[in-house]
Amino acid sequence: MLFAYLSDSDSVNVTSVYEIYPIGWFSIKQRLADAGFDTKIVNVASLMLLHPELDVKRLLARFEAPIFGFDLHWMAHCHGSVELAAVVKEVHPEALTIFGGISATYYADQLITYPSVDVVVQGYDTLDPVTELVRRVRRGDRDFRSIPNLLYKVDGEVRATGFSHTPDRDYNNVRNDWSYYRETPDGGPSAAKLIMTLPNTGCAHDCGWCGGSRFAYRNIMGVRRTLVQKDNDLVVEELRTMREAAKRTSIYALQCYSENRTRMHQYLDAVKELGYKSVHFEQFSLTPLDILQKMGESTDSYIMLSPESHDLKISKAAGRGNYTMEQMEEWIPRALDAGVKGIMIWFFIGMPHQDRQSVMDTIAYSERLIRKFGGWAALPLICPMVPFLDPGSQFFEEPEKHGYRIHHRTLEEHRQAMVEPLWYRRLNYETRWLDRRALQDVSYEAITRLVEIKGEYGVLPAGFCKAVLRTIEETRELLGEMERALLLDQKLPADLRDEIRHYNRKVLAYTNDQIMPVPRPLGGRWFDDATVPPQMIEDILTSSAASSPVRGA
Image (tube, rainbow, N blue to C red; front, side, top):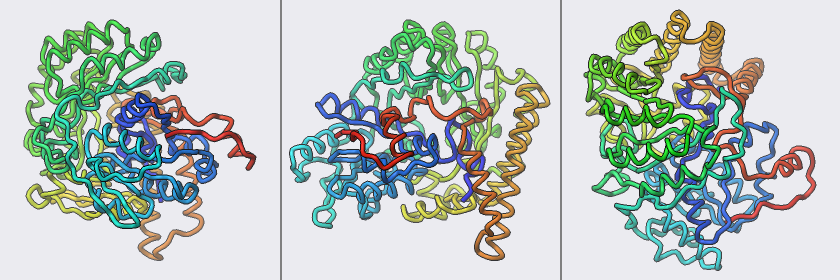
């Protein structure tokens, strides 16, 4: 398969294998630590990227733990998580494998049937069920009947304990500790130290494509109240754990569009007091002036807007559409005057009513923004919705109503889609206006033109633009060659397979994103592995000599 440029949307600083893990993983680790358990997070994907020759089975054999947990939060991990659990079961047959996350919750009944999965923990906040499960396993007790939100196996028979743990306050009620990250080198200006904060879960809004929307949470999590906030004092305490390193650290402030004025002011006061280098704020609507001023006073603040389309009809159909482009253009100078350093404006490909011409009209509108505001002050970006439309979202559950067709329904269909050689076949959806192949083609067409525009107006250096355009051209040529070979012979010839391997090694050797599309070295990100001792990696890479195991819960 080809790890093609744009097959993961290229919108965040990861590679095509999407090697990030959800921030809630930290909270589980911290809660278990508070309960007296030694717990470690090992990012196997990150280690494999840093050490391409790594023998994963030998690595996992070095770990000693009665429980191994796997996040299945994003569907991009549906194949790898189950396969990695199978390797764990092979080398540690007596260990318990547990899964959790939004996708694990949605597909719990299917996920528990895989031989590599012993327990599925359902819910948006699993701190209490997981802590009690670990407590029992550590004392040799495998009777889980009184622990809520579990599907588990007893002698091959699946048992369920009911989905009753749905807290409506004190969500994720633990302080995430970033102290491990304080001394991590930041890698220079192209790879700055970055942490994330998540003050709430669920959403009050209803974007039809989103698996974390109000509609999705009501159906997946079985709750009526779909926005659950974390104690704001705990969020501020998290910020304090970076100490002096805060001055060299940026923050990606997730879901702050659901925060009220009081909580936002408290958060911004802490950012200013601690001296954080910068913060990127997700905003659903046009931020009011008092918050803008507070952002400008607190740090170098950037705002991420996502109208999805310049066309209000499409924007509304996507679940946004609460401001026009004219209103946004009037608001941008006010935000900049208040001290906001820049605004990123995200457009999406794969929305209702959106055909090829509409996508290219969005690119033409992006040129207007660049011409009017100079580029970085109001930076337009665009990406396709890949690889999947979220299961549980309104468009996935009611596709005909919104102009969608779903190609993959079950968990196994999604797992097999993840190893399709051609990425348009991985897509689990198409729309009435763009089929899967057209979604792929217009994505490359749109990104190509937007990069050209940024080069023409000097937003990005010419060399950067040429490199991106060369990568797009190479990718499209390879995809075309692969498609022709599969159509004619149902297999890829040896020389083409070698070409694909060469391409994959190049693409997986660095990360980039559309905000700064420059190859960046792997490592130094908050989610990169910081657990496995370097000497253990070296031992595994160079010899079969035994070394001390990593112990954990």
